[in-house]
Image 1 (cartoon, rainbow, N blue to C red):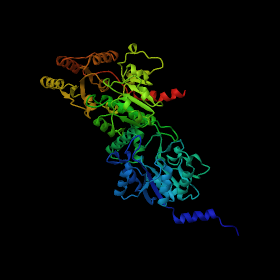
Image 2 (tube, rainbow, N blue to C red):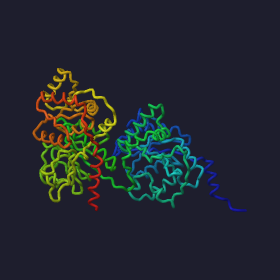
Image 3 (cartoon, rainbow, N blue to C red):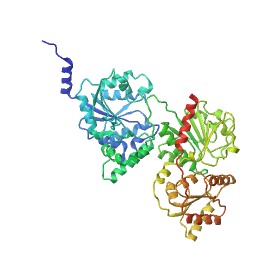
Image 4 (cartoon, helix red, strand yellow):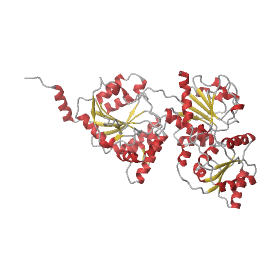
Length: 568
C-alpha cells in the first residue's frame, strides 16, 4: 500500500478549514508629498471612505483592518476606525518598517490570507479582490497570487492590491534586510521567485488598462484627476467605479493629461528634499508665492521630491496648507539665522524681494551638499548660486555677464511659470464681462479707479487684497491694471491686456522690456487720465493676442540636471 500524499491531505485540510482572509489598509497621514491625503475629498466623500465602501462589498473577506503606525498625526485614523467600527492596528515599532508592521498585523488578526490595500487607491474593485482570494484558496501551495497581463501586454488596472499568504509576509519580512526593502510593501516577494511560489490568473477583460495610467493619489495632480473623473462620471449619471472609469477614459483621454506627468518612485530610488525660502504677505503680495507653489508642486509631481516652505506670513502658510504643502513653523529675517535648520535639505530655492539684503558669502552659511537655485534676482550675490532662473523676459544679459565658475542663468518666455489655475482657465471659453481688473497698492489709486469706472460706465473690479478668485477675474477682464509684476504673464495667458502703473523707476524699466520683447504696445501710465485712455483703447481692441505656455517643466528638468551634471 502506497504512503499517503501529505501535500494532498494538507490541501484538503486547508480547504475544509477555509482560510481566513483579512484586508489590511496600509495608511499613514504624514505623507511627504500630500499630507492627510486619505481624508481629502473625492466628490462627496474622503478617499479612505471610497476604499472602505468597496471593501465592505467583498464576499470573500472575513475582516477589514486599518494598519497604521504610532504617530500623533495618525490619531485621526484611529478615530475614523472607531467611528466606522473597523479594527485599527496601531504599530509601535519603527515608523518606516512597513513589512514588519504588516506582518505583525497579520499575526495579531490571525490572517491566513492577507490582502494588502494601499490607502491611496480609491478605485479598488471588490469582485477582482474576491477572485484573487478564491484563486489563492484554491491553490494551497501558492504563496501569493498575481493577475496576468492580457494578450496585448496591458496590465491589470487593479492598483494598490496584493494578495498573499501570511507565511509569505513573514518570510519576506525576515529577508528584507535593507531600508528600501523594509519601507515598501514586500518588494522581495517579486524579486525572489525562487523563494515565493506564485499563482497567476486572468481578470475580466474590461479590467485591463490600455492607457497604463496611474490610479493612485500621491500628489495634488492625482487628486485633481480623481475629482475631475468623479465629476464627469456623476454628470453622465454613472457611479465612481473602476469599470466606469476605464470605460469613460477610453473616450475622454484628455483627463489623463492631468496627472500623466507624475513620477512613480521606484524601490531604492533616492528622494531628495527641497526647501523654498519665499517672501510673501502684506508687504510683498502673493504673486511670488503662487508661482513658487506651482514650482513646488511640479518638483514633487515630476521628480517625487517633497518640498517644504520657509516663510513668515500666516495667510501664505494657509494657502500652502490647502495645496498639501508643508511650511516650517518660524520665519526668518536673514540667511544667517537658519543654517542649522537646513541640513536636512538637498535643494534650496530662494525667491526673495530686493528689499531683503543678502550679504556676500551667504552660501557658506548653507549646507555644502545642497544645490541652490535663485528665482528672479540678478545681483552680485546670486553668483554664489548654482542656478538662477528669471521666469520671464526682463533679464538683460548684456548688463549681467556670467562670472567664471558662477551661476547658470535661465530666462525667457519658455521659463514663465503658469500655475494650474491659470492653465485650466486657458482651456475654457470665458466671456469678457469686466473692462478692467485693478490691483494697485496705494489706496488713493484704488479709490480713483473705482470712481473712474462708476463715472464712465466702465465695468471695474478693484482687488483689495489677495482673492482666491483672482484667476477667474483675470479671465473675465479685457484689461489688467497693476504695478508691474509676475501677474502680467498670467494676464496675457488669459487674454487680459496688462497695463503698468509702476511703483518705481526699476518697475518702469522692466515693464518696457516686457512689452518690447513680447511685441506689445507699451501701455505704461502715470496718472488716472492716462489709465482711462489705456482702458478705453484696449476695450476697443478686445484682446491681448500673445500666446504663453507653462515653462515650469523646463525649470524642473534644469533643477534635476544639477545632480546629473555633477555625476557626469
